[in-house]
Length: 119
Image (cartoon, rainbow, N blue to C red; front, side, top):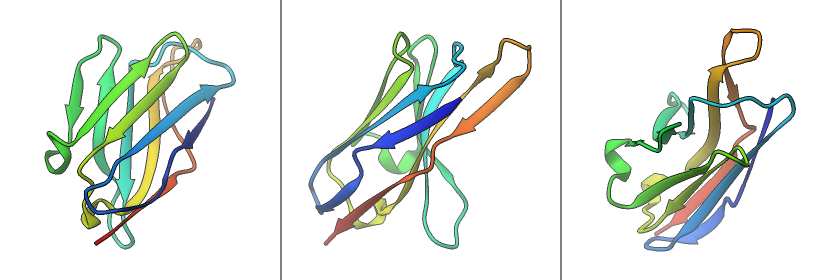
């Protein structure tokens, strides 16, 4: 399984960006798809994720500003980011996990996409 993100870039504070992530390869139904981010010297942290039933889960710092959605048929996940702040600057990673056809619970990561918010 390969995950490929797109939509990162540079924006001024208060602006918006939309991230997309698509899965390819030996696909199966992912229980959870989500977005994480990492800044230099820090651990990767949850931004938002959504389970197969469509229930979202957000990190505290993005609640009310970011919206996660997914297309289960296309194995895609999206992140609409509004009201961006400089502290949102990070590399954003797409994640997908679930039980593969061999019965193993597996987690996959994209290569990351840079989001830079200037003040």
